[in-house]
Length: 604
Image 1 (cartoon, rainbow, N blue to C red):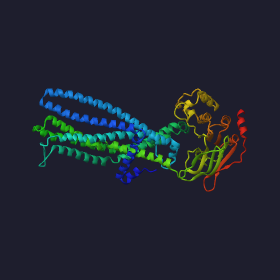
Image 2 (image 1 turned 30 degrees about the vertical axis):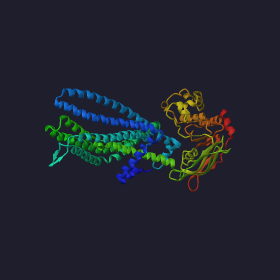
Image 3 (image 1 turned 180 degrees about the vertical axis):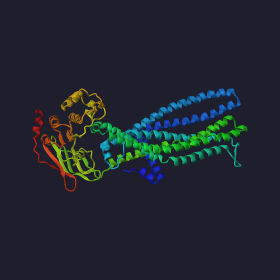
Image 4 (image 1 turned 180 degrees about the horizontal axis):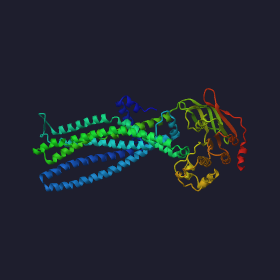
């Protein structure tokens, strides 16, 4: 899915800014319109009030500075001592404001981040969206980064830039008022014309900010795109390292370290190349900012000192004028000071916007979707009608499947590798959306699917066995019994071990844990996608016999290649290439043992 903000940036920079602003506003107001809106608005009001108080402290400091230097200029000891007492009050107010500001802002930040993280996690994990979004042709890269990193960056930048802009507006009006109080009877002669000092200083600061902002934009406008590329490259490099860690055994077996090192080097070189591109922009941006700051630092003294020497302005007026001008110059250069943060903020908004659009597209796409429903009555446990499973691009994988799985039935699904067995299992399980037709499960029945690669969630071993339920819903005795039954008695006393401590588990041991999970949850329908492929034939047979003994009423569909599996099932169906594209499901002429024989074979 294309990102409209990026496309607009290439075609029309102004439209790009408008789209970014709309996308940023759309994300930003969500919390303030949610069920927590009053908490959100109250916290925002408190943070804003504290920022306004900060400007108030600055203004008080400006007037105190003028009074202090007037006392020094007049050599008035009593006035000087009084100003020291006044300073203690201003300092106390500044300390209280700083304490309240950091406390409330941090609280506001983490509450907003918690809500917005949940706002993205819930739809991402709902209905297998996290899986289906990866199947789309233009899936967003690194969704984990969107939720973990971009949400954090969006909130911190929004608060920082938003409150910074508010402070700028209030400070400009406050210190502009201070400059306006300079006596109009003391004009500055410029090119034969008398110009009031307040007008000269305010005009100079506005011109400075305007020219500085324009030049800054010319130098740094490419930073938004470069920052997007940098974040993507960093995330790709992290993903490659994590993938290497997760597949360390396979890499070691193949002695693929050199190939992995080359790939990691290639991905890291993208980071370096883009980093240098950012450096080339940011260094000139920094140089310009330093130069323009140095050039204007002396300006307020050049305008105020002549009035001081002529007696038209006291010493405190000179310092207050200089301080007010410097503050106005600082606040008027808001865009210059925050240009890099604004560029980063824009790239974060682009990434969050594309992620949200991807989630919405997956959830709302109704065309070419397999319908999933529940049926009543005494019919089969699982039923498919006119089922066509397709690739995301529309090409058929499996066509015209009318299939029924009865309670207690044991059906083996066979076919050559790559013909579509896994895709059919996914469609029946409800996680593969591409295709048409319908799949229905008898109302009230629970379905579980075991993929070929056994999944171990984060947490303890007991959490992995209880997954997707909670560990406290099953007793330790039940967990140990399941482990012993599937041949993992060595793990029966390690229920409290962290999963990380069991990282050395083989593929076969992971598959045994998956079978233990099925025994504990006792599903009514069990779909096995080559779930015993890592086991030897004897162990495979033992696990199927265990299912027949412990789950006699569970309807099982098992995809596999080994011919020996047929003896452990009551029916075999085969996928074979059909005319017009897409495999077709047919019954295979294979000798089977009666289900009673399969169950009684446990004793043998």
